[in-house]
Image (cartoon, rainbow, N blue to C red):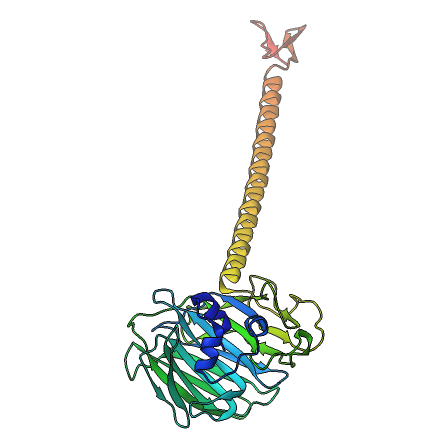
Length: 355
């Protein structure tokens, strides 16, 4: 019945259970008959309603499948979920959906539901509605500000997605107009009579990724944990840390295999953005490298062409120079006299004519 929250705020669980008409099994069994999931990235506020699907895979009596939070800026917190053979507001025993807020000032039930205050070392309001629990059915519980009543009011609904039903559990008034939570947790708890730790009934469940109606909120990284001195056979199956994925708590029975991190997963928006940035950088680096290589090749080609042109020009100049320095021989005549003249620019002597 929310033992983890009770543990945090220092309220004896027996007081809480008694306030809700439950009989604690014994201190050790009751305190540690649970296993937990904690999520990252949550935001429950006036700008973010959170919904989560819980799918019991096995159902035994006196089990609680929870979804809850602790306020960041207000003391304590709230929680909800589904229970097998719980106690309704009128004392009737039934499978039910529950919604409670510590320090709640009042509650207004939904149709077919009931709300009651609780007291002891802590006070608050709890609303409950009967439901039919069926193993394998998907139950979506949602929490958000009740805008029709004002920012201090919070409302919870329960939907059986398999059956296509949706009901308001109730609305609870808090003592704050700006309460918000940046955390989210789940647990499964056995709250029945004392039994040996390996005789707790089977109550495994799949907890789907919590979602927000605020597109800027992305919840990920479910982390499974057990109390330091657990009194139940349990294990968790989660995606690898840092990723988005559903989680399973395997709970109860005589034995559970070890926990795993092999659940299917997707990357977060931040990871996808980082991947895109890395890919863009790699593409930009490659383009820059390709351009540098092309520029270098073009420069080398231009240099080679320039060198070839210079060489050709030099050769031409050398040829021209060589041609300009080449001696030729002419024959000059004067009457019966002949004379050969050899020079770069040969000229016949005075009185001679070139033959």
